[in-house]
Image (tube, rainbow, N blue to C red):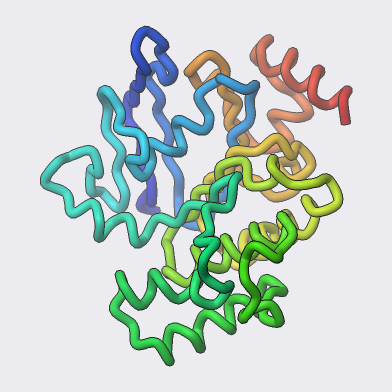
Length: 246
């Protein structure tokens, strides 16, 4: 099966801070890759390199065999296939829920408004937010905002969605509603790369778990392998610390 994403020897520095030190990773269609590790291990930077929100210093990132780091690649076209959900939602606060979801399809995918709105309402319904279609996003709870952000991404019909700690800005009681939407997406076969601190979600939903530390992938495997019998001492230490806090 052809890889959707293939990352080869990726490096990224901010000044003297070497954040990514030669990352290699492949993602197949339908896989859910959960990336775990301490703060500052390079997880979010890796994700942000995947759609060039951060430009790598060296290495290659392939989507469907096209190297997005190559200046000749039509990045805007490829980006329409790569959804991104941020921890801080990044919604347009001056627009209502429906407008947030239709802006991309109308402007970028060139859909007419009627078609865009019909599809957006169906997707909002699937994340439990259809009744809020006319609401201003400023009136929503954090969990509701994140569900709208996921709906907005789905309206672009992406091939893969990158989730950058999608629940870390939420109050604890709102985390479950967002994770539930993500679980349903995984069951439907959506390819996802998820940076997360939610170990229960990673155990239950991930096809593979990637443990990063100090800019490298220390260990990767199935949830059973990583959580039940980690091999790397750094993985063991990290899991001992985070699981004892649960």
